[in-house]
Length: 181
Ligand SMILES: C[S@@+](CC[C@H](N)C(=O)[O-])C[C@H]1O[C@@H](n2cnc3c(N)ncnc32)[C@H](O)[C@@H]1O
Image (cartoon, rainbow, N blue to C red):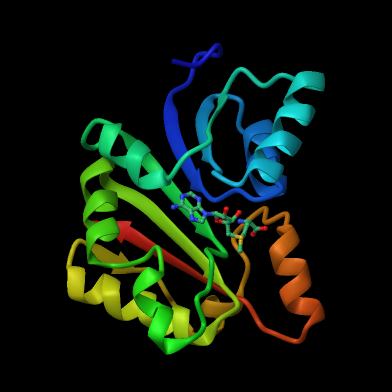
């Protein structure tokens, strides 16, 4: 599946400009990364970068992530990153959010036991929504040692373009990590 020999598999959903995905793929050449981005501008930017610097451990998919999730074998992923998903801040649109019982069910199926689901957002109502949805689902355990963990970026975090804009506009990101039981 990958040109490089890989011993672990990570998925990033909605990679946007691809800053985070490229950073992670370069720093972990023995991990296979799948990046999903249906928005043509993001994918075009990624293809331009990969044409210059091919990465044998990175594959991309340009459609809805749910299609890929349904295609992947059970217990095949070590991690899923959902970084700044479309926020849908208005209450009447909350049901369009990517996090919900159906997609958490998809995550639970494709993640290995002990696999990691990371969710970052600058929208407080989406952070609360995700905590509640994961607790209700039951297959995920939230990893938070102390209150400060919530706002501490993940190790080696390079930032994303969307995040930089959110911080410029005065919003404070939250970084959640859940472990598949
Ligand atoms: C707010 S942007 C954040 C992009 C990037 N993660 C960042 O932090 O800069 C959300 C991204 O999710 C993508 N997206 C929305 N729905 C998606 C879906 N069903 N499957 C995969 N990606 C999706 C959008 O095209 C968009 O690029």
